[in-house]
Length: 105
Image 1: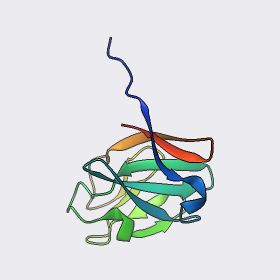
Image 2 (image 1 turned 90 degrees about the vertical axis):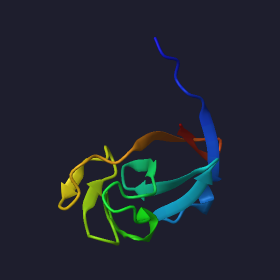
Image 3 (image 1 turned 45 degrees about the vertical axis):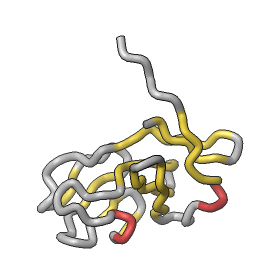
């Protein structure tokens, strides 16, 4: 059985863009953090369709739209919700502990 990866502090929760997307670097990865009405979610920041930075896209509640081709994803589970996106984006578990947003990578 594989062991779970540890949680990593990535940003103070007070530094998140409220109801928007915040870009953070974690090691060599660029992560998009989404502040939503139901919690904080995390994904790789690059769109898996065209490679655009999702942090530059339009965000509405639970849906991030890629700025390049307007494909969209549900940030709660990564599933594509509009073409041309067809594959789920890479998601990471996220939580808030002691005032820090943490991501399991």
